[in-house]
Length: 253
Image 1 (cartoon, rainbow, N blue to C red):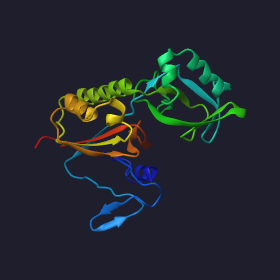
Image 2 (spheres, rainbow, N blue to C red):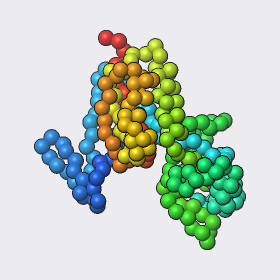
Image 3 (cartoon, rainbow, N blue to C red):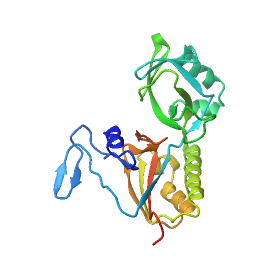
């Protein structure tokens, strides 16, 4: 569905989130006017003298070095730089500090580079995806993303400090880049259920960071079971992410 939105509205920004709380498909409720729907999507299109800017904070830091996918089948990662994927990962984990090794037990991810033409990669250049399993007999990893040969990837970790730093970096980058343009008049925040008090140990972390770097802009939103936002010019469904949509006029009026 997200890919279809990019196809139908190629020049538009898309942000949003998945409804949460159901134990099985068909138990969520979506509301549109007087109707209640158990599947599909409810959206709002904005047009006129308005620009929608986006900020997507995935909250991870890289470990090891960028690696090349040299063998894969669908979402099964078989080889990295010609070596079995599990062997490569074990080598990276062995070089980590003890606290990061412990963190990797629960918060290890794979980042997939979105723009292979960059000379070096930084925060925001990777699409972060879950590692969902292993295939021991093949020395392979199961990734929550379809992979392609020769794609650049890098393992990542996520914790509260990293997520906070990444969010501040992304918001500061937006604020600095928006200097001299019309200031946003409102914003929406779609944040993962796994963030907030659960991650940071206190409430309102992401909204307070937004206010610190963007200013006193009216902000609304909700916690999601998956967040929608662009990375590298393509819209994706994310996890453990904060996705912002900021609304500003095209020109001063």
